[in-house]
Length: 291
Image 1 (cartoon, rainbow, N blue to C red):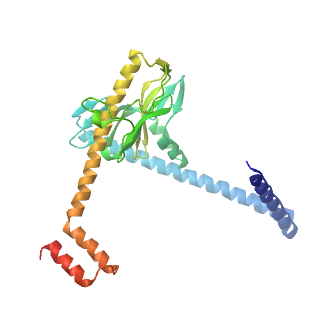
Image 2: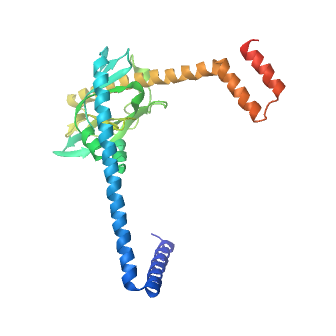
Image 3: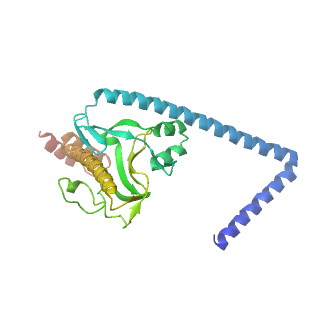
């Protein structure tokens, strides 16, 4: 902290003391103290009410999530399995087997995930509690946002919807679909944990953790190689899903751009803004509607 910051804090504190003295001088110590206590009580009551509202919202979201999961389970039919993911290609659904938002490390529960932390800011403790329980969760393709492969809590690869995948391209049949896992990796003789963190847009399950290694493992061991292979299969599946979602969005944009009524709507907006004349609008209208 610089000298200017210290001086600013001291000045603010001095102003606060001066204001308090002036209040006491004008209204008396008893009145000022009473008002201050009342203000603190009101603040506490407001905080309690806000927490109650957050808890009610979390409970509502929890019930909605359960109902939604029941409906998805009725229609889900696994057509393919890659890594820890089962896919329903017809309904564009995917299931993470034994998904949770935590991993065990050194006999303690360690939370990982931006989404979980974000929920705490909303006071959604019930939703957080539910998210920590493992289970077979079903999501729609478009609910999956991005992923990070973690080694010792450090991301060694990341990818997601609408953005390039970090790393070089790997060889193999799915080489063009996921980045090199060595791109961010530092050379280590061993690691303590490996997990795949997947972020979603789902309020009740915003962060999915798939744990592969939870204790010290040498990076040249068969155990490490097998874990990495399993993670790669899951990542390849995620990137296939991202690719399909990106293609769907691109096709939708192209359809909208080729829609004559959408183009006519844009031309009308330009007319209303005075950018084009009525005559130019009529010419464009005839052109689009082939009159």
